[in-house]
Image (cartoon, rainbow, N blue to C red):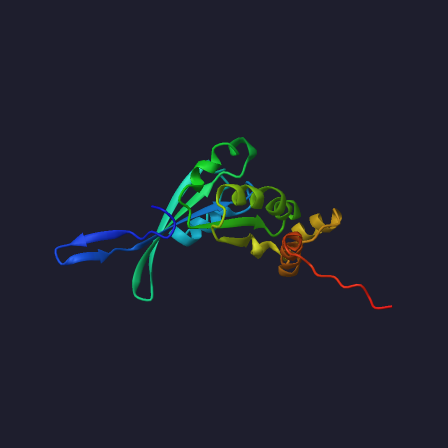
Length: 181
């Protein structure tokens, strides 16, 4: 299915629009929470043990405005070992969920240095949704002590917003005026 296509089914009375199918590809560092996010969404079940994903596909069906929608969630491996395999999952994507761990500044830094450039290369023009995972751990005292020991802190909405503005600024043409003398 190409971007923007809808699943179609034919009936004796003519063409009937079937469920809209959406392909969502999920990317982000290994261990950032991608699989947990998808399992909770698609199955309502939170995994208790971390098992690195090579490739997994989850599906969920629901209704929007009374119309059936099926979303196919493609979970990808975030580890570098799979950098050559992962681009195969981008074909036909309608949306990208770019995930990071809010308790790992390195995970967020990789959004800007690794994931955005990769997605932009393989999926130019495909909408991107930035998703902060593990928000339930933002106030975990043990984790906060470990971060503070390294002079770090959890990623906040304001940090994300500022980083995205900085990332976009080279693309904008700023008009400057010399002060009048």
